[in-house]
Length: 355
Image (cartoon, rainbow, N blue to C red; front, side, top):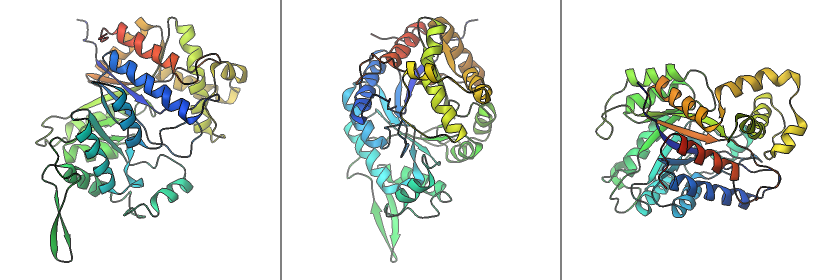
């Protein structure tokens, strides 16, 4: 029996190429979100990273507002907000306001990692309105506070012996669902205990996915909003008309990940021709091949088969694609032509295309 095609979603780090400004990169992601919206993708999430020359996704709420305004039906969210960097009330207010503006279309994905280097992390957490040195240790408490503050009934806050009502917005009529994200079993355990949806960062780690999802499902405590455990899979993907073309397009992202994993100097994302000219040193080939083997880099039919197989292997009905196809030197600087092609070809091959 043929397995049903999974629903498709998108994870976007808003990459900045060597020939782009930040504005160009944002415009390219806006165009990519429109393609996802038009071709039937379920949701579009943006990440949070700081002080990285190759990533413009520094502020998920701002990006979400831009992308939700540029689209019509797709859910837009964070993949995710790095909660130790922010005061819980600020996050709750931001996403409650987004949900009020785009009802039924906002997701709040929350992570525990800093999403940056130690110096930038220090700058984010000092003077950030209620974020202290113990922010990581208080992560479970902060998550529960955000869920409560976004609820229509709000939360009671005890100050100086009196209880004060606290709500993220004056009058909420719907609430953005909260997802916990992680690349270890910590968030799997917490999501199961709180009865929240959970996503393992398979696209980044590639190891421990099955174990984390099994832990989440077997220890899940049903909640009123989520009576059943809910999760999906993330995967890096470069799709082109031929596998050879897809391999070429994956080179810039492979270079970026090798640099990150080996402590090299971070820089804007290379163009395909630049990545080809540099190549990889022999010492890094094992790392490159290991990453390449976990990514979906293929022609449309093969990519569709691989994504369907991944969904079946991990028991999910949704796959979130991180489109990693790099750009050519002659591509428009304010567009993501090859990433758009990846989304279109996958949607068509999996039969999810809507227009």
